[in-house]
Image (tube, rainbow, N blue to C red; front, side, top):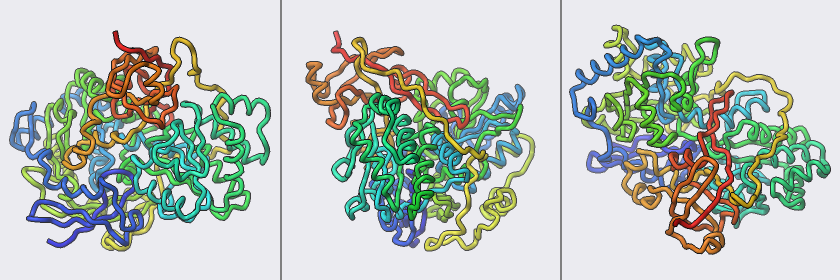
Length: 615
C-alpha cells in the first residue's frame, strides 16, 4: 500500500501528514509539504503518530464487566443498560464524545443521541475546554470565529503570546512564533511564570501575578483605546497585578505602533471568557486605528474540536430541554443515571477519584473507544471502535478548512467503525436504522448542517482543502463593550499562606492521553511525569531547607498534600505550580474547578498556599 494522507490526531494544530505501512502493520508518519497547517513540519507527537496503528494498548474485543464477550452479547447488554436508564426519563442519560472523532463519526453520534436516545445531554470535553475563550472572542468580534492559518503568524511585526507553555499545548503554533521572532518580529510574552522557552526570544516579557491576567488585559485595552497613560486607580490595579509601570508602557506602545499584530494563545491555557474578549477588543482597536492587519490565533484543544461542534455535538440550550455540558455531566451533580462515553478518557479532565465517585452514582456506564483507559476499566460494557488510521473521514482544521482522513489499514481484531456500532445499538434499542457508510453520512451532513452545504466531499484531496466553512460554535449576541474586571483575586502574600498555588498546563500534560501512552516512544519520554509533584523556584527550595526530589507539605484552605518537589528557575519565588494533569491533587488543594454558566468551561483559580517540611 502507498502513502495515505491524514491529519495528525493529537493537538489542535491540525498538521497534515502521510502514513505508510511497513511490514503490513507498522505505520510511519511523514509531514505533508503542501498542507498549510504543518507546511512540512511535525512535532515529536506527529512523528510518532504512526505507532498508534499497531499499538498493543488498543482495545480489540468487546467486554462485559472487563470479561471478553461476543459482539452480540455486548450489544444486547449495552442496549439493556441504556433502556433501564431511559426508563427513568431521557434526562437521565448523557453522551460524551472525544474531540478527535471525524466529522462523520461526530455526526453519527449526534443522530444517535438526539434522534434515537432523545437526550439533550450531548457534549465533548474538547468543546468545553475551548468554549470559554471562543465565546469571549465571538462576543467581542460579534461574528463567528475561525483562526487564521498559523503560518500567517510569521507575517506579523508584533506578536503577543499569552502563554509561554504554548510549545507543549500547540507546538506548531509555537514554531511559527519562534520563526517570526528569529526573523525580526517583536515578541511579547505575557505569563505568570518567568519563562518556559520563549523568554530568550522575547523583546518584552510581562510577568504578572497569578490570577491577574484579566486585570492586565483590561488595563491594556484601556491604554490602547485612549492612547494615554494610566490614571491613579489604574496604576493601583497595575501594582496589584505585579506589573512594573515602565514594562506596561512598553507593552502598550508596542501594541499601539504595530502595523501587523498577532495575538497567539492556546485555548487550554486561557479559559475565562472575559480575558479572551479583551484580546479581541485589542485587535478591533488596532484595526480601527489603521493597522494593516490585527489577528487573534486561538489554537483549539483537539485535532477536530471544531468539526465535532459543527456536527452538533454540543448540549441543547433551549428552555426545559437544556442539556448538561461535559463538566456538568462529569461533576455528578446533574442527576445522570447513565453515561455513554465515546473515544474519550474522562479521567484526564476530572481525575480517577472523581471518576470513581461518578461511577458509583451511575446505574450504567458504556465505553466506546479505541484504547484502554481508566474509563474503560470502570465501564459495564466496552465496545472497541476502529481508530485513527482504520477509517475514512474528514477533519475541520482551526481555520475552517476541511481535509481528508484516510484509512491506512483495516480495523484490527474485532474493532468496528463507530457508525456501525451506533447503528447496532439503535437497532437493539428500538429497531431504528442509522447510516453507516461515509457517503450517506456526508449527504446528511450537507442537508442538515447549513455551513457544510457547499462542501465538495468528492473533491477532498491531500493537496487542496474543500471550501472553508464558517463557525457555528455559539449563538452570537452583539456585545458592544466588555465589562471591566473590578474585583481582584484575594491571594495576596500573608504570613499564614505566603505562596500562591497555580494549577497549570505542563510539559507532561499531554502524556496522560491514552493515545500518547499507546505510542511507546512518547510514553517513554515522560515516565517521570506520572506521579504527582509540585514545581517551585530553586531559591524557595533552599529557604525551606530541602532539595529537589524530596517532599514538602502543601497546604491550602481546601486541604493538604505531601508532594515531591521539582525545581525550575522559571517559577517566581512566591509561586507553587501544580501540573494540570494531576486532577485529583488539584481538586484537593484548589477545590473543584469553577464552571462558567455561559459556556460550560471549567478552570481552577489560584489559591493561597503554605509550604512546610514534613514531620
